[in-house]
Length: 325
Image 1: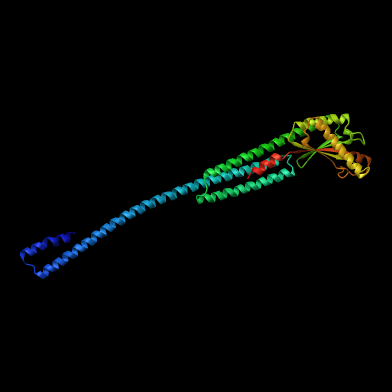
Image 2: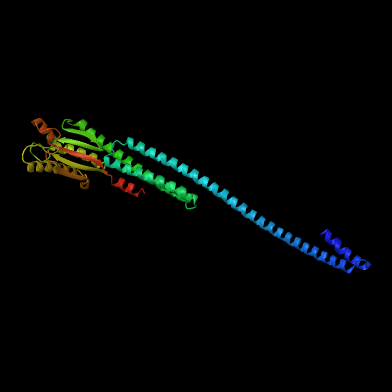
């Protein structure tokens, strides 16, 4: 800029003095034009530089926003990761609670154990689902609200299933205690109780309920069965299977008939004492499930018996486990 100003200012001066030849004048004119072109070039370069500076400023601003977004997503990911870790801890606690419940439930049968195993598999599936959700969070496909909803639904269903199991335990314990009271007050040799695979087996001898060879329940037997009915009425969610057993005397048809008739007679007494008929299944086993070998009169008398099998009704458990998906 300073150099251009000097040339432009001296040129008129030299012309006025008449000391500059035409050739020099032309040279000066060319120099002036060159300087003007250079100035224009510099001005364009400056404008380009300013444009580039503006563009760089905008790029830096965009980059700053992008970096802020990256920081925000990093923060969200850390939050999701922490939430998932907490969910995993809660899931482990639920597994521990379920294991403890399984160990302390003395009346769980094989079917209920299988159902609990199925529930554990579904819990494992839930854990895999949580891991899938964690991956989807990294690709913006999941939300924390969805995770909270899943956890809330699982907690509710697990609590409902746990409460159902506790009710079953209380009912079975109460029934067992009532039956134990009956045993205490009666002839324990004729009425015994055992527990196998979560079921209570109450064995009533022929002498306690029937006259030999008869299928009608005696007066004493009716009193015993009515006491048993009171215990069963107090636990309405327990299923009842009545099984009649005979010895090996007589024909096969006779064995079936008398064992079935005795089971039906006991069922009628219980139903007459207000036990719901839909809870009861009566059947005969003939002589095919002897308690002891039929090799003496004493053993044959032991085999002539009626067994009342009491087990939990697992329909509610089926429903809860089916809904746990």
